[in-house]
Length: 319
Image (tube, rainbow, N blue to C red):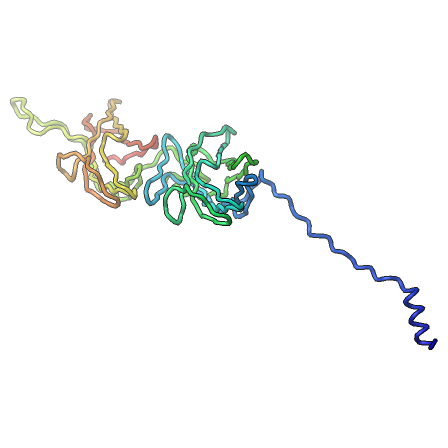
C-alpha cells in the first residue's frame, strides 16, 4: 500500500468526529396579562372563538361624537375611550360587538363600576356588530362611562371566559376633558364661564356675549306697573355640537340663582334673540342661534348664578 494511502486510512480510523453545536431557541418572555400595555397584541378566547386584541390609544372625555350618535357622560361621570384593533385568528367567523367583551373598571377605592360599553367601527362610524372572517381585522373605539372624580386604576377586558386583560391607565390615558380637566382624568367640580369664551354645556356650545343686571318693577303714582321686573339676563349664542339634531330648552337643565337675602330660584327662560318666544325647536347639527337666558326675578342684587348639565356645575359671571 502506498505510504500516502496508508496515512489517510489510519487518520480516517482514528480521527475524532466533529460535534455540531446546537443553538437553543431564544427564550420567550411570558406575557403578563395582569399588566397589559398599550400597543401589544394579546390572544383572547378559546378554540372556535379566538381573537387578537390590542389597545393603541386611550383618552378621557365628556362626550364622544359618532356618525350616527353622540355619546355623553351622565350623572357625575366621564368617558374613557380605547382605540382598539380586533382580529379573528380562528378558522371560522367570529361575531364582534361591545357585549362580547365583559368589562370591569376599578378606581382609587378599588370598587368596580357597572359598565355599559359602546364599540364603534371606525371604518363605518357606527356600532360594531359584525362577523369577522378568519384573519379579518377591524379598528374600533371602545367607550365606557366611569366615575368623574378620579383616574381609572384598573381596566379589565374579558372575552369568552378567558383570563381578562388588565390595563392600568394612570398617567397613560390622554386627558381630553378640556376646561373640566383636573389632570389624569380627574374632573373638576365646576367651571367658571367667561364672557366671550365658548364652553360646552351638555352637547351644546354656549358663548355668553353680555350680562345684564336684574331690573326691579317700575310703577306709576297710581300703583300701576309701568315696567315689569326683569331677571338676570345673559345674551348668548347657542350651537348644537352633536352630529344629530338636538332640542335646547330651559326645562331640560337645572338652573340656580341666589340673591343677597339668601333666596334662591331655579327658574330660567331661554328666548330667541331679545324677544319673548321661548327656545324649544329642534336644532340641526352645527346650527347656532342667538338667545337671551333670563333667570327668574329675585332681588336686584344677585350673588350667584349657575347651570348644571349632567350634574356638572357652570358658574355664570355676574354683572
